[in-house]
Image 1 (cartoon, rainbow, N blue to C red):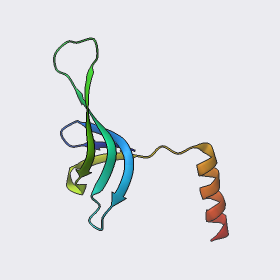
Image 2 (image 1 turned 180 degrees about the vertical axis):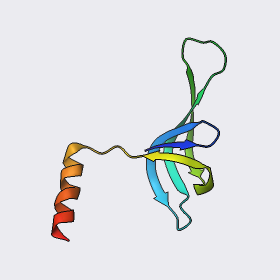
Image 3 (image 1 turned 90 degrees about the vertical axis):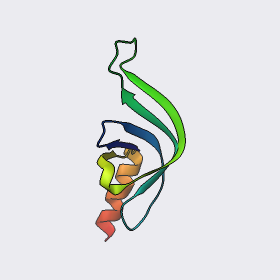
Length: 80
């Protein structure tokens, strides 16, 4: 799961859970942020592990899903 926050950083990790308020916990997360200095890589990254991302800070949220998973979700939708 890839989550963007208001200050421009992104966190990439495995979805762990979400609470009633919409806060998301990622495990094995990596933080990515753009560098203002000129460097070979335009993004710096660091491992942060388990992280809670508050709903109020979130600007985007993307989940990766395989084609097989998408097809199984579509078949579940037809059964409802």
